[in-house]
Image 1 (cartoon, protein in one colour):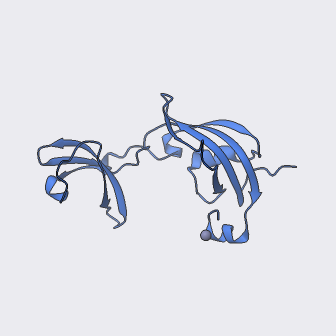
Image 2 (cartoon, rainbow, N blue to C red):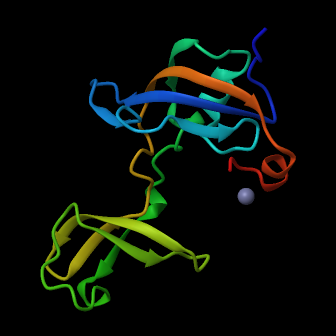
Image 3 (spheres, rainbow, N blue to C red):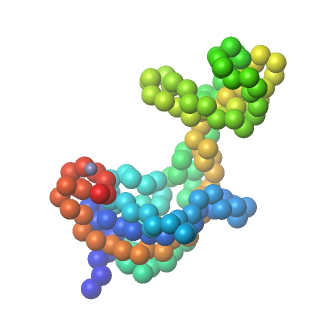
Length: 156
Ligand code: ZN
């Protein structure tokens, strides 16, 4: 008998994530499998939904649209800031990432998109926003979560 994936189960899996051009974005290969508590929103919704009803040993390919992944690119998260906002940084180049304070006061990762004199265009979108995600998944274990894990909403 094997447990079928559903709420309050801990799922461990190896995965490889690629974009539509086949570029590998992330992988658990060579590391421990990823473990998560199913039904607690620990992983992106599109992948979590695709795993429902699967069992230990199953292998599957899952394609996740941006809306069920890291969201669409939101233009309002791109903004132009003045160079003076980057105190202590000598040379600002496109592609550099910084931690900034978001509107809600929480730390936010921003990436420099464009440098035009003193005007710096930064992007606070998730790096995988707007990207179609292709997961290759192999489920290595499915077990019942402990009461404490369920109460905390994550795997211990
Ligand atoms: Zn905990």
